[in-house]
Image 1 (cartoon, rainbow, N blue to C red):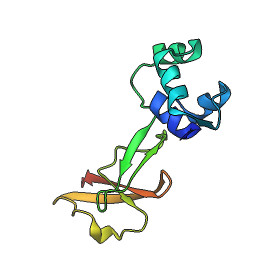
Image 2 (image 1 turned 90 degrees about the vertical axis):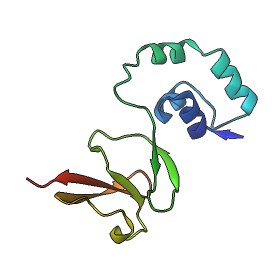
Image 3 (image 1 turned 180 degrees about the vertical axis):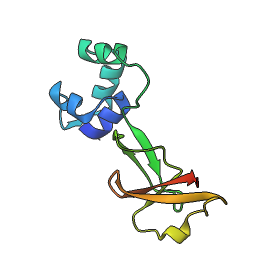
Image 4 (image 1 turned 120 degrees about the vertical axis):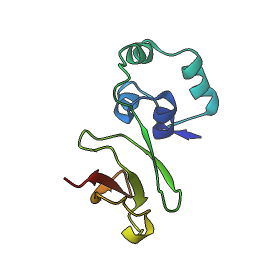
Length: 121
């Protein structure tokens, strides 16, 4: 069975939209394939309204261990240089280049920390 969250990710829609338009909490592969092959009008409209500027889902992948998670990007997220699991020590990351300073942004996705390297002024 496929969860509503997994279906939303595969359809590239928000979880809120999936709930609002009545996607059940679990679907079979056949049900999801039917939606993908014959999208309902609300899904067609949603895809037509896309500008491509902001992704619906992003892949967060730990630079240290490779654990991955899909998450909805937040407006406040900068462009991360690296993303790591909350459990890794900062010394596990590749070092910042000379002339750069590293900032830590906790609370990214469900269990990640974002790292941003910026040039020193």
